[in-house]
Amino acid sequence: MARIDGRRFDALRPVTIQTDFVKYAEGSALITCGNTMVLCCASVEDRAPRHVPEGTGWVTAEYSMLPRANRERSNRDISKLKLSPRSAEIQRLIGRSLRAAVDLNKLPDLTITVDCDVLQGDGGTRTASITGGYVALALACRKLVEDGVLLRSPVRDSVAAVSAGIVDESLLLDLCYEEDSNAQVDLNCVMTGSGGLVELQGTGEGRPFTVREQRDLVDLCAGGIEQLKAIQTAALGGKLV
Image (cartoon, rainbow, N blue to C red; front, side):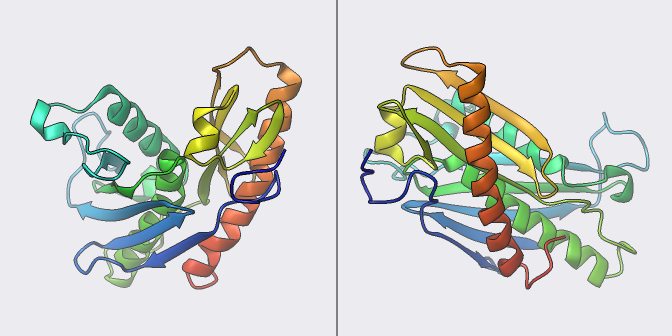
């Protein structure tokens, strides 16, 4: 099928990652995926949560959309005194994904929080947050080594994410909003740089989908994540971890 923006079925939207976008964060990255734009900032705290064993660190995330990130203004979560269910679900996903990249035993009694703020949304905000959030996390860990806080980086692998779906019975990579809103099947895939699956979120929105279709969608995402890994590597100066 002909895509809205003329891309091939297996092509990403144009992706850029600008590092050190924020002055005070230990690591920051502004990622754009087509018209989706997310600011990711990694902050280091000299403490770990109570549920974490002594001598072990923690990586977590927070996610939010600015009121005018979408076509119509939305209320800030703070106005309701709690996160929206969608924001809470997405930030848990981001946190799980980023922890897959880090050996928490090598982050003793430290917490790294990656804040992902959506400046503009056009589909794929959670996957962009993971991909950009990893870059911010890696930069923060490098700074911990440069400052002598850690002997070596606790990052053991990279992580990135992308969506794929079935639209009008065609498999497509990296759905924009219009494609996503008309998808019969929508799947978000998180993978490590070495090719391990971290999480799959697949939904049959217009119809059920088969195991074979899921495999085809995952293969499509794997190709996209290889491209994202190259972009992350370039943003990090040629060294991914």
